[in-house]
Length: 98
Image 1 (cartoon, rainbow, N blue to C red):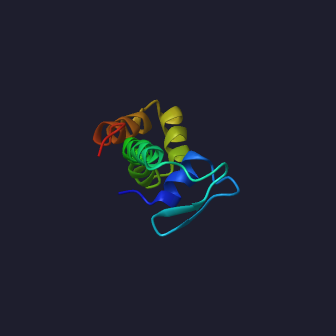
Image 2: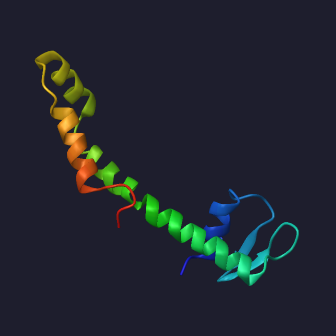
């Protein structure tokens, strides 16, 4: 279950006039949305976060090495270690995984 504050913040870019208390929307521009709308937005948010979770995992791996230095060394030495390393990360953590 998604936190409705996170959902509407994501869906409506944290615009002014929105507030929540617990699991309830207490203020919203043009009136409180229906439960069906909230359920739809929650489903969209859950799908978005699931499909994009791989990015955070990849970022952890990317930060483990100095990529500029790897690219420089590859260019200087005629190797392709950086490309192989990036390909392995993308293979191990594919888009939309999790």
